[in-house]
Length: 220
Image (tube, rainbow, N blue to C red; front, top):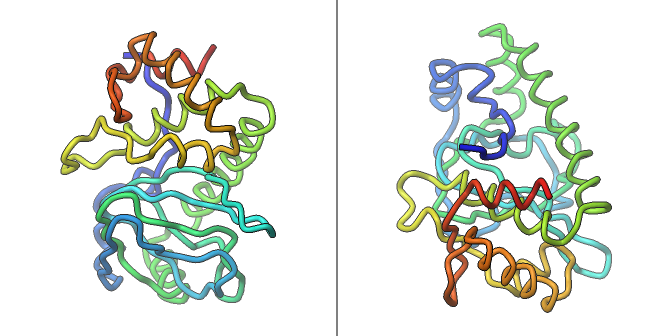
């Protein structure tokens, strides 16, 4: 299997046992598909440890347009970069029915100190900044086909095991176009190409037929 490497989660870095301890420190919260979890511009002061489901991160421009930054799945932290006194730099919205655990920044810092995980956290934050730079390069220089293929790949690769249809992408063509800053006709043309290659099934819905072929399309 070819695939594409997904970013390491915080759970990956600290291990499943420490991750479960972190969840136990927080307060469980649930979110329905489409529900905002964090809003750009809101004050920080807390973070969420995503235990189940996928979320999308969106950046809003002054004219109200929203651009998709990335998709994140279970095992990730949400909102930690705002710290105790900063502001949210992106909106986070649930793609699936999600569960996350709420911790204040003070709670989280005590947890890191208690379990000696400050170094792992710094590695996690550094990796997030590196990923953000990589995404900016993608937006500026990658072809429409590569950008669409990467988004579809990551969305399906991060689908929870409990998803009714993990190969189905929960975006319409119009949503893809808006999220990636592309013309709808461009998205339609590239999806036709991906269907012809066998990466996507044929039909009215976006369903991945072959994850490896999506990875190949991203590398073209």
